[in-house]
Length: 419
Ligand code: LLP
Image (tube, rainbow, N blue to C red; front, side, top):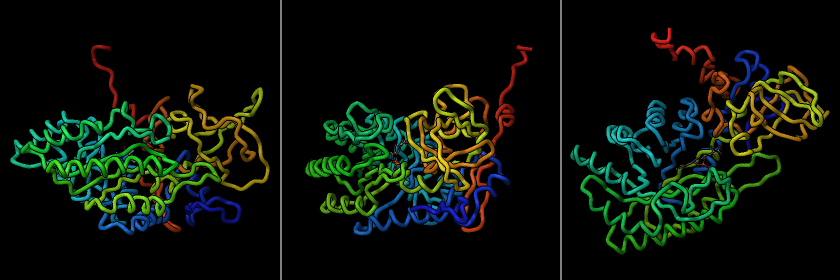
């Protein structure tokens, strides 16, 4: 469910016609719906209704825009961050340190220090090496860093290989069968309060079964660690719930997920932590684009739009599907290749796609672009960064300015010795 709907044949974001935004802000532009974000936050929370006091953290990487984070902060969400930059954003959006967890395999010393300075709720440490470093830094301040050990359960999440994180040869977490040793070593360090476990096996999961398998393994480990005398008060179950990108696809709902979690974790006696990203923000955003021209091809025509792989990288990176819809409804259809202007063939959003018949100047959207859209943009081909707009009812605001190629160039210089 989302709040991008046709009214009088024109696609609207809530009550705002998309042509209005295109005209005032220009294209391409990301458009987010506040009502959709709020709805998904509530549906997710309600899905976990059976659990006692879960801590729900938005995975900032999915959409780090400050206004988006603020919407979720107002819904009671905290933040799962993976860099100093994301931590600063979460704080700037009003998320409090007691609801911030720091994940990631490569936290630098400076980032660990920033987490300690901030007094975050938990570091999810991903290796013994990282644990030792954090322990040293915390002990030097006379502190104990609250942390959880991320476990790699060796479970295939059944998703795209580039976004699968829980297989033994993925870089994430400590292998399940090293967990006992790692706990024994790290749990004894004076600089750490190691009282948690964490897991995240991948993103865009279409099936709950791999999650259930992984959680089952964590449950067994939890029992073993307690038997060995460790105290475990929190388990972070990560994110990963997938969303439909293609009309007609169906995915497990947050309620299905919550029921599975409640069943598997019934006897754990811990506070559960969740890190949803895509399921909250995915279909709360579209990338609004304009057709530059339609070029005749040998087989299909090429619909060349003004958005490109630098703005929305998912199709080029993962072969991902995004529904492509016209802003003004039309009955006529065509089979086309939808491409951006960038000078490589990878800049293709869709091939052989049955799509509305479009002509130069028409507006269209790539759907489900609210997660892993703007956040993955680059300035390849010196294209600058696309602006972002947040709609709320009949209001809208530009929540990220367009950064044009000139502004990026302003940060560069030619050294004198090249003169
Ligand atoms: N927690 C951790 C530790 C993660 O690594 C991730 C995502 C999440 C939570 C949130 O996962 P979600 O609920 O959004 O599935 N760029 C890719 C997705 C990469 C996901 C990386 N980690 C894409 O566009 O599909």
